[in-house]
Length: 290
Image 1 (cartoon, rainbow, N blue to C red):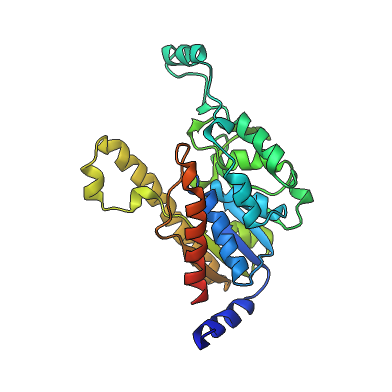
Image 2: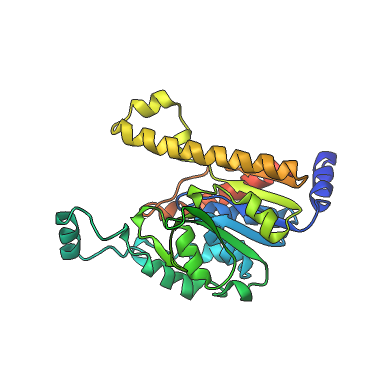
C-alpha cells in the first residue's frame, strides 16, 4: 500500500461517528448503490445507519436490515420487469383512456413491488432493523416532505420510490406519498436531524437530463417535455446543494461519491445491473481510497 493510500485509509477510519450512508434517488439505481456500499466495505467502512430516497431508499432498507451488498446483488439480478409490473388490465386501461385518465394517479399500482419487498427484505419493519434507517417521500396532501422512520419497510420503500405518473401515489396516514427524490435528491439534513449523523457519506447518481447542455436538450424530439424534465432535475440538484451547505455549516463531515460512467439500468435493462454494481464499487474505491 502506498503512503497516500495508507493516509487515506487512516483518514477514513478516523471519520467521526455515527457515519450515515446516504443514497440518492436515481431511476433503477439500486445496483449502483449496492456497489457503492461494497466499495465502502472493501475500504473497511461499515456505516452505522442508512438513508435514501427512491432507489436509495430501497438499498438503505436492505442494508439496514442486515443484507450485505453481495447479497443484494444476488437478489437484484433475479428481478425482471414481470416481478413489479402491475398495470391495469387492457380493458381497464381502455376505460381509463376514454375517461380522460381520471381516477388513477399512476399507471402501475405498485402493489406488486410492495409484495416483492415483503418477500425479499431481511426484516419488514423499521423497528426490527439492526441499523437505523430513514427514507423520504413527498406528501401531495400537505405538500410537505415526510421522513419515514417507523412501521412497514416495504410500504415506506414503495412510497419513497413512487415515481409520479408511473406509479400510483401511496396512501399513508391520511396523505398521499410520491417519490422522495422530488424533495430530497439525497436526504442529508434528515440524516443529521433524525439519525444524529456526525459523518455523511453520500452516493449521488446524477440525473441523465443534466448530463448534456440545454442546447442538446432543445435539439431532441419532444423538446418542451425534455426541458420540463431538465427543470425539475435542476431544481432537485439545487436542493441537494442547499442541503450540502447546511450540513457543512453545522460542522458535519461530508464525503461525497458522485457516480461516474455507471451503466444505466431500467425496466428493460436489468441485465446491466452487475456491470453497474462493479462500476459503482470501483468508482467509490477510486474516489475515497486513493
